[in-house]
Length: 157
Image 1 (cartoon, one colour):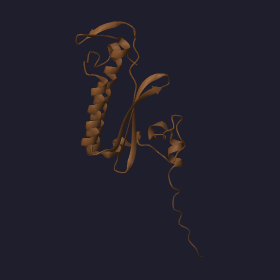
Image 2: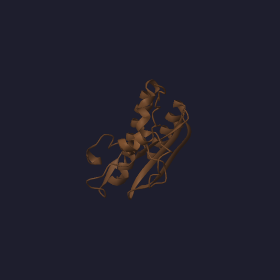
Image 3: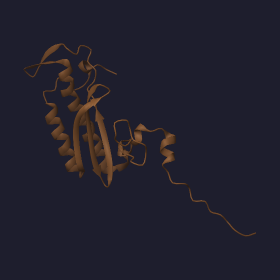
Image 4: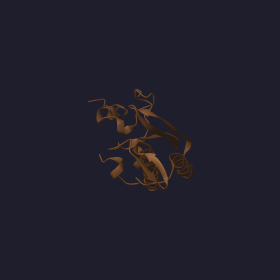
């Protein structure tokens, strides 16, 4: 994985709050319901949890800032001085926005592109308390959710 300082959108001046608002606008335009953007911690690091319902199903995206090679180094970004770890949050917002925009654009033509982000409430709960998504499960877990195949039994002789 690349360090934040070497990845795309490093110099962005767009605030994380603006990126969150743009993501919610994309979801609204897409036709999503019950949209939620929550900022919290995952594995001790900042994370965004984006949840929404679409066509009767629940989906979830999680984003975290890329790690910084020099997290406490202070640089000027668009005339404002910020430590690299804070700029990585700005960068994460743009990465999240681009990701969501591309995925929703693809889902308009091919809804199955969202499958990996589909929450599976029938499964055990993730330690976070949310249902697992399809991408968080292995093949055995996923196939265990499938109904048993219909078995045709023939009677007679």
